[in-house]
Length: 293
Image 1 (cartoon, rainbow, N blue to C red):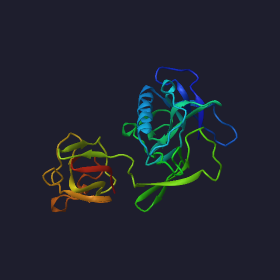
Image 2 (cartoon, rainbow, N blue to C red; image 1 turned 60 degrees about the vertical axis):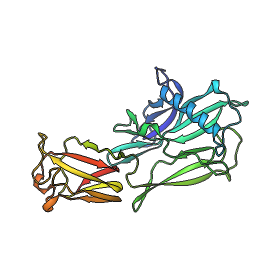
Image 3 (tube, rainbow, N blue to C red; image 1 turned 180 degrees about the vertical axis):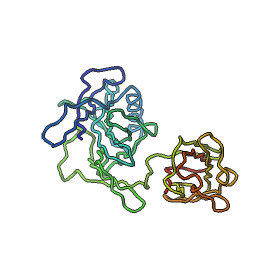
Image 4 (tube, one colour; image 1 turned 45 degrees about the vertical axis):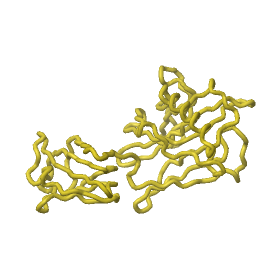
């Protein structure tokens, strides 16, 4: 599978701006399908890009293009590295925020990396309210101008390591030599792409029906001052005896693997092979992932 740069051949509302991404596939690396457009910037990206440009210009620690023309602001997608992760395709689109045209052509501006997910490579969803995932660095840093992600993160213990290209100047501003470019490393807690957060007020998550893969339930949780409790419901929505909210023991701490317990040592063995729903109750907690084994 290859993600390739394209322009939308049939502009439609919300999908008409500049660079975009297409997907092509091959069984032998010699014969490829015709690339199909799958991912492009939309109106919301234009608004976000304008806001980021204005914020960068006000920040004395940020580098911006010397060619600033607010009438030419725009955002498009520079590239889309993709990797597989627990049954999903995760993409890291490089969002190019234009600051203005250059005398020799092309556009000046900065590039930050965001997140997107897909189950089929064709339909993509943006996540985390389009927040920046890997940002450019401050002035004088090797990545002050732009960042482009490498496709596959590496698992190191309880962390994911993301390697990326960094350049010290914005796109198409001053040319830089190969010695000026560098490879950077960004780290993330395992499964830490996004979280469901709760503050002092209780937050509740009810899962779709699922069949436990084993008797034990684990969470990836950040709650050193808070807690998570889990109730198990049958397919009809009735709490399972022994696994109800009243029997749930609070899980606290900040770790990628914390086991959920119920009073009396009850576990998911009593619902083995049955579809159940899990109701999480969170306070002052961030839930990144859960699984059974």
